[in-house]
Image 1 (cartoon, helix red, strand yellow):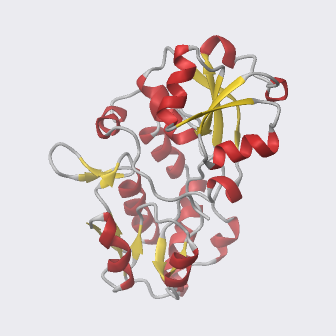
Image 2 (cartoon, one colour; image 1 turned 90 degrees about the vertical axis):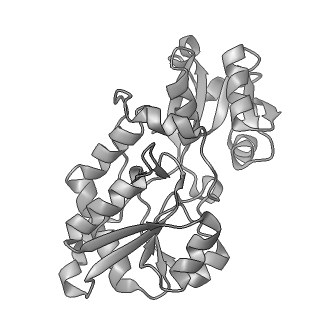
Length: 274
């Protein structure tokens, strides 16, 4: 299942990302390559009416002039261009967006809708376009020599009761876990030296690192555990809307192969979280 949609860090941070230098690495390949065999010309998709929200930076939000911008907004437009169909994007309040899709007021919802059992009965979902791994963070001098096999007795800050704490319990039980009420508090413990490492949501950690690059850095590799961290971000369509879903999946493969997905990722996520 996809992790529940959560507000990201600071709204102002998303605006700062626009001017930040790109130092992120390209995305791993998430889309199903078999989708390239599903040609959108074989189905009837005259247009795609995307629904989104305006409160989920840096994915979908309004800039200082009120214009709807973000990673998801750019991606939706590129999907329509790739499929060569007309495209509209309309913002809804988060608590109304899913119902608007179910009521056929749009063809697709690109807003981080969780792939829960209830949502699975109402909607179908595209291939994952952005996975959400877990990662360690350490102070810069400790990050270079990080070894996950040498965590015995080391203090690892983690959000208490969350999926990343369960990961540590299951896969790295020798680590000494320090539970915090929030991921930010756990990251600050590493910065302040009261914990050796942080482990948690890599995307949130990337935003925090972007704000304080001199302090800390990612340590080791990204951990992909869909059963714990969720399957990542997808695009929801009404159940049974196979032509639209197939067109989106086809476009996602094309956009990965021609470099567009990497381009958007580098633009919106200067500190890469993979």
